[in-house]
Each structure stands twice: as C-alpha cells, then as structure tokens.
Amino acid sequence: MTVLSARYVIAIVVNVALPALAYRIAIGHFGVVGALIASALPLVVWMTFDLTRYRHFDALSGIVLAGIVMSLLVLLSGADGWLRNSREPAVSGVIGMFFLLSLFLDRPLVYYLARSTLSREQQGREADFDDRWATRPALARSIRLMTAVWGAGLVGENLARLWITLHLPDTDANRLSTFVSYATYAALTVWTMFYRNRYIKRQA
Image 1: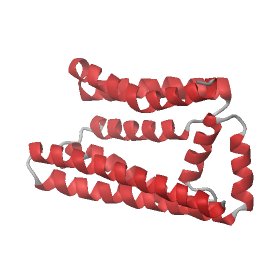
Image 2: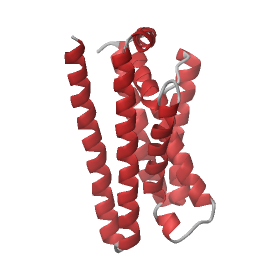
Image 3: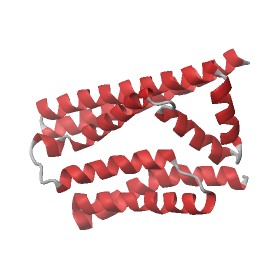
C-alpha cells in the first residue's frame, strides 16, 4: 500500500469511524453534549494536520464537523420538545440546503468534495481537475447534477425523518428514522457510483 493510499484510508477512518467511536465512548460519561464535542476532536485534529502539513482543506471533514457543530448549537440553545428530538434529521436537512444553495455559486459543493478526494488519491490531481472543470462543460454539468441530487436527497430525508419524529412513538421513530437515514445514504451512494461510471464511459 502506498503512502497516499494509506493516507486515504486513514482519512475515511478519521471522518467516519473515529467520530462514531468517540461519541459512543463519551456519551456514558459526559452526556450528549460531551459526546458531540468528543466526536468533533478527531476531525479538528485531522483538519489542522492536513492544513499545516499538506496545505489541503478536507471538504468532507468540514461538512461532518459542520453537522456536529449545528447539533451542539441546538442542544446548547436550551431547546426542548420536538426541536431537541429532531436535531439529527434537521442537521442533514441543513447540509442538503447547503448543497442546493451552492448551485448558485461558480463551483458547487460536490466540486470541492471531488477535488478533495482527487488530491488525496494523488498529489497534483486537483490541478488537472481544475483544468478539466474549466475546459469540459460536460464535467461541470455532471458535477452540478450530482450536487442537485445529493441536495434534494438530503432535504427529502430530512422531511421524512422529521415527520417520523413528530408522529410516531419514540421507540418506533428512532428505529424507522435510522432506517430512512441509512437507506437514503445508500441510495445516493449507489446512484453516484452508477452515474460516475456512466459518465466516464461516455467520455471515453
């Protein structure tokens, strides 16, 4: 395994596994607020290291950290009732809105996620990606389509989970809400892989 591919695997662990593990360990000792803070620490350390050592901003880490921060803000605001219970689906909905609003920018959110992934896989690939973005309208259209699909998917997941949270008993709501979340992310991931492969074949 090369240094770059090993670093890519470490990035996945830091962005997904370590925050989840830190949350599980801390929640029994420090409550939800402490657990959320603990889950953010691996991301902060990783992003600081990435920025100082490689001059690279990890867009995925930034999105995950933004979701944690928004959950913390809801909890620390003193909100209770439906707002407190719905903080998790609300966060995914806000992130979905970020995707949709970024369509009005010159470069939407998926552009930065793709660029971040490429720069981690091989140093210098981000420059090639920038060139292709500027010279290939088909690439720009595909990135905007993926941004729109992810944004709409996350907002739709948000609305479905909010309805579940507000209309079902807590036990059933938690179980069904978790299923909807995993199903949505799985569907978006499968669609992205299918669409990416289709785009590559067309360009070839």
